Structure formats: C-alpha cells, structure tokens
Image 1 (tube, rainbow, N blue to C red):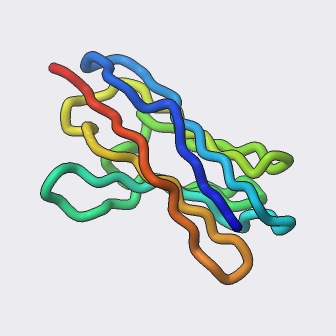
Image 2: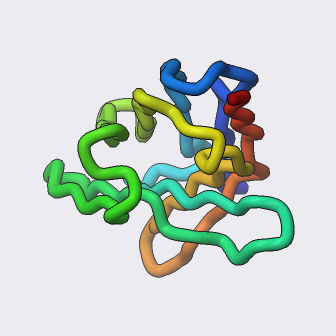
Length: 115
C-alpha cells in the first residue's frame, strides 16, 4: 500500500520560513514526479511546485523566488523550503507523487502565516 506523508507545517509570522517534507513509501517503484499543491479555505487546490526524478523543477508564478523544491531520490522524499512567507500563503499543503501510472496524495499539512 503506497503512502504519501507530509510533515513540517505550522504557524509562522509573515516574513518567516518553513520547510515541508513529504515521503512516499510502500512501493519498490520510485516516484517519477513529486509535487506540492495547496488549498486555502473555500478555494480550489492550486499547483505550487513540481520536481522530476532528474531534478527538473517548475513553480507557480506566485511562489517563484520564495519557495524552493528539492528531493532525495534515494528515499523518495521531496522538500519545500518556503521563505518570505505571506499571510496569503496560509493553506493546507498537499504532496502528490506520480508512481508508475498512478497518482497518490498525502493527507496535507497546515501552514498558517500570521500578519
């Protein structure tokens, strides 16, 4: 049974930093692509950043220059380093892993940025 588990969320003041982690487990296959999405209350889930197994990255325009995605292929773990956080970054952050031909989601981790 594949599991995708996020950690690292919390409460931070505007301008601060947080690092989210996400680990995929329960399979002998490696994740081809891992990504972060976020969903604020009452809003749709938005793409944040993605990284391929070879290290190619892509970011949403609203996080460029502030967030950095990275991954540890040996452990199928992806990280999201978030800096210069703003109150509008407040959301539940979800990790997504594409393993084989299937997409797996984590349960989400809450990030709250106070003004």
